[in-house]
Length: 151
Image 1 (tube, one colour):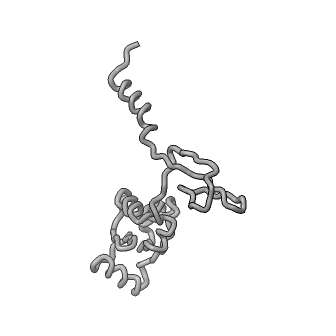
Image 2 (cartoon, one colour; image 1 turned 135 degrees about the horizontal axis):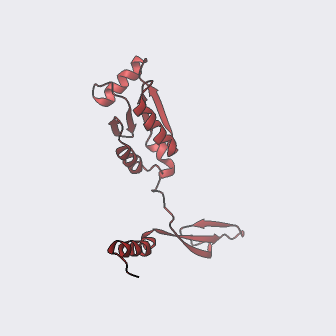
Image 3 (cartoon, helix red, strand yellow; image 1 turned 180 degrees about the vertical axis):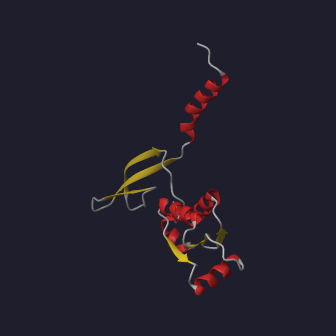
């Protein structure tokens, strides 16, 4: 049976790809009172009960569980804004806590939005900590959320 170049490349990628998946070592630690906990390594006062290497586990960025507290997300919207709905769906899909501010009627929110955008009433406008973006770009928004430590 003859194999084409594309089949050979596909086979090689299939065999090599699993080797590129990150691995995490989890250590089961035994405390003096007999209870166990799972960590990346045991403190000196604990005993290693078992060690397991897990392949394909994605380790969240350090501090990502607190990303919402350290890097709040604010979404400025207006009614019937399709791009606003796309941003909202992306944030909800990643379980990102965010504050939504409807800029259509409230003068204070409009003033806040203009301060963020440099004078424009543009929606959707998203702030993620110091990051500010108007409009909708899935790639840019995902990148900003990743950089802020959101899972």
